[in-house]
Length: 212
Image (cartoon, rainbow, N blue to C red; front, side, top):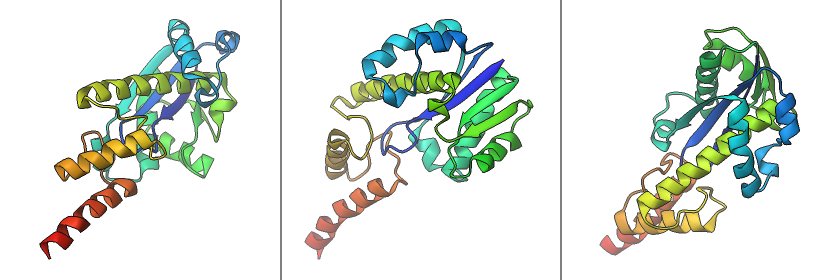
């Protein structure tokens, strides 16, 4: 059995990191479906492929919420490696293909291996989601799952929140306005991220000047 592991939502200011491990006996049917790196597919195409992939693959998912990311006792790379290992252990494949989250591909493989109970052969590469169909499929499931979670959060907040990324003006307007109104970051924000800390500091300055 082969397994591909990838994530969605590593860098945003708002929302979870979602990691997917996906296993198949052979990637032939994934190739036939036309899976690709999720970033190279339209949202509509990802949504079309997601149920088809689920029918032919075993899938293990883990959502890492913003609070867990903020409260981590290690680097984000190490946290991600632990989650990769957790999902691989659920499957116990013969080979695990990883989209490496560290600059050093082998170092990331070693971090994952250090907490594994099973002993698959590990292939850790940058852009593995563009090379191995099983990782491409995992990237699609992770992305669709995260997008669905962001829609749930948007309903919870009762207003548009965008994609959660700092380049998304809808997201940044939401976070900025929430901080201005509540003097704190909105739920599901990665408070330890530099953009969030900067917005909190900027919000405090006018209040300090007014007090003085």
